Length: 443
Image: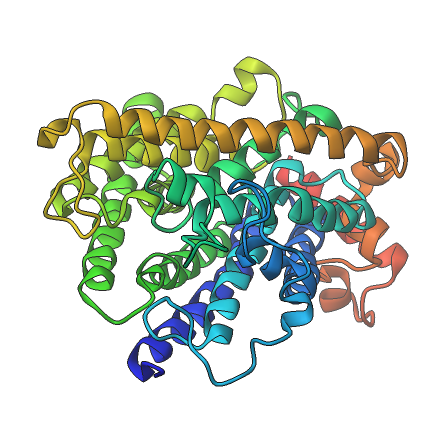
């Protein structure tokens, strides 16, 4: 029998998570230079279009079909095109219609792919990005989602090896989403190379209000991301909601304090980035810690991620929008922190080191986290090098300098000449003039 309350909550949560991808587009779009804003946002919208289709055709089946390989992969043909899932039957997940669960998990897949784009901003052909997005989702995200999110139901589907084999805790995707996307971003940033002028020219965010609006939409949608993963309107969802709130709040404070001591001032970009860092870190742990534990976890995440974003300058890789510093580092910290801060009174009902549980849980969390990291890194490298040798990743140097928006999309994000000079909609020469003027003003 369908649980209408749980169904309503999961469908609402799915809509909230869907909003996160346009929110991410705003967040990322504001962080790049004026000449790149449309391309940056298009990478998120491109993922939204492509992965939504692939999820229906075979992605859901690969992630949640009956296991065909020792917890490594679901049967890719079992639910091909979602066949057999439109009937009025429920899943084993709390009386949900199967299609409600399909929709909820679809928006996780979309967002994970979109997250990677921030690491390779300003320099990649849009067509190449779309090919990579489809291949990476197929070879990396769909299998890893099976590992982490498929808890099985019977002997024909024992579930994923992380979820039911080692029983690592990842409530809403610290491994499958954030570590997975973060390390993929790192690998691609190394393979593709640095932006022209990286380390020599100013590459400041061009629209901080856009960044803060995007961060706010991400925070709003993240309540669906985390609390929706309870798959019902219940106590677990309520505890997770509160933990998501306070961890994020604490991470903002941690990031801003770090900035104040390091740089002498707290910034709006830091507040927005701190919020995202806290959201990333609490995602795997939100059902396992107390609200006080969530505050501590979030505050440490804010500090760690604020320090980690500077690693690209020391180590020489160009992670354009700090996907590595926020998502990889934040995801690793949140996943491992369960081993320290988990309490038996929380919905997950496990004890970490500080609750008398010993080191066993920490070891389990580490296995899950680093297995996903290693798999994603290796397969992303293979895909990345294969694409580099065939299609090629980068746009021409002169087009990167003049502006990727005009080169890839024949558009400009800001038609300032048209607004003040009486011209019509953006055309090639006008858009390029506008881009150069904006870039010059920024520099």
